[in-house]
Length: 337
Image 1 (cartoon, rainbow, N blue to C red):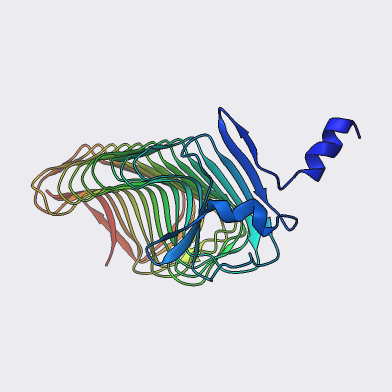
Image 2 (cartoon, rainbow, N blue to C red):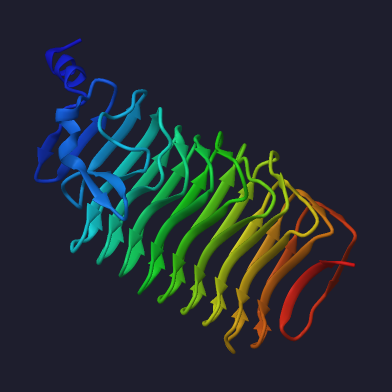
C-alpha cells in the first residue's frame, strides 16, 4: 500500500473541501467534532446536510448512533435554502437508527438538478428523493439495491412550480417494503412531467396496493415518461402508469413489462388524462411476458378528452379472463370480463 492510500484510509471520516464541493464519509470513526457543524433543525426534525448546495459527495455507513441527535433525522447530500441543489450524491449504505427523509439534493426555493441518491441498506421511515426542488427537478436519480422502507414514497425528482424532467428511479434488488409503495420517476405539481423513468428489476419487494408511475403532473402535461418491469419475483396487485396528467395531456408515455405476476385489480395504463378536456395520444404498452390475472390494460385513456394513436403490443404473457376492445375515450384496451 502506498503512502497516499494509507492517508486516504486513515482520513476516511475527515471532510475534504474544494472548489467543487465537499466529500464526507459518515463512518464509525467519525466523532461529534466532525459532524455537528452539518446539523440543523428543520420542520421539527434534525437534518444532516453538507455545507455547500452543489457538487457534494456524502457516504453514510455507520453502525452507531450519532451523539446528541434525536430519532427524527433527515439526511441530504446537498441542501440549499435560497440556492440551487446541483450535482450532489448521497450514498446511504447503513445506519443503526431509522431515518425519516433522504435527499440526493434538496433546494427549498430553487431547482434541484443532477443529484443522485443511492440506497443499499438502512431503514427509512418516510420518503426518499433523488432531487427535490421548489422551482424544478431535472436529471436526478434514485438507485435502490437494498434497505427497509417503512412507508415507501420514492421520487426520482419532485418539483412544485415547474417541470420534473429526465429523472430516474431504478430498483434493482434487495429492497424490503413494509407496506404499499408510491414510486414516481418524476412528479410535478405546477409544471410538466417529461421523460422520467422507473425501472424495476430482480427482487423488488413491491407490496399489494403499490402505485408505480413514470411521470405525473397535477397541472401540466405528462410526456415521454416510461415504466419498465423486468422481474419474475414481482407478484402483487399494483397500479402501473407510464404517464398521468390531471389537467394537461398525456403523450408518448410507455410501459414495458417483461415478466412478473399481476394480481386482479392491477390497472396497467400507458398514458392517462384525469380531469382536463385534453387528449391521451401516442402512448404505448408492450408486454413481452408475465402472468396477468383479470387484467385491465389500457394504452391510452382520457376521461373527458379523446384517445388516439395509442398502441398495445402483446408479444407474450399469460392472460386470465380477458376481453379486448377499443372505444372513443379509451384506446388499446385489454380488460377483465
